[in-house]
Amino acid sequence: MKKIITASLLLFFSLFSLSEDLLLMSCDHKASMTQDMLTKVLKHRDSAFNTCLSCQGSSCSMKTWQDKEKNNELICKRLFCTPNFISHGYVLPGDTPSGKSSFTYTYNISQEGLLTNINILEVTGVYSKRDAKKFLKALTRKTKYEPIIFQKKSYEINNLTSSMSINTMWEDRD
Image (cartoon, rainbow, N blue to C red):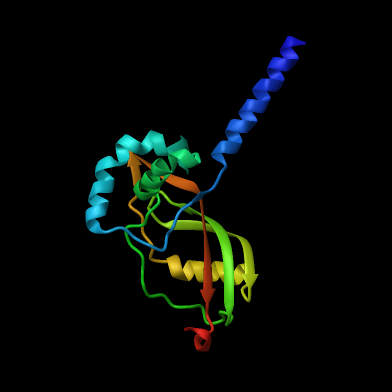
């Protein structure tokens, strides 16, 4: 009986710790850091690597923080999931619907520092999931992150999320 209880507890806690790693981290890829900030980020990244990231092989997840530790979360976001370049101009796909839409999505930061693997979770408004994905690809095509290199090895981050509300109806913009 003790073995069954022990095995059940081990299974429960291993599932619980797995679910912690699967939580999504909300990062903003629509605002970039300055060159001065990038210099500071690079100076502190190595010391915060194990504090901010949970990695298996070359694939990492941002660690999540309790409400009382939100300052740690903000520092980790600045160090690992803030772009160092965003394009302020982009071309909308020709078949973009006109009107208001909101969508939530997940994405990765690749080992090369690119925003990849966009997955649309939810859409409201005139856009379909396909429209939202095309829009995000156009918007983030030139977005760049400083690649994450720790102990001479490159890493990707794979548990990022964001949301966006847009209005592509030109005459309704005030």
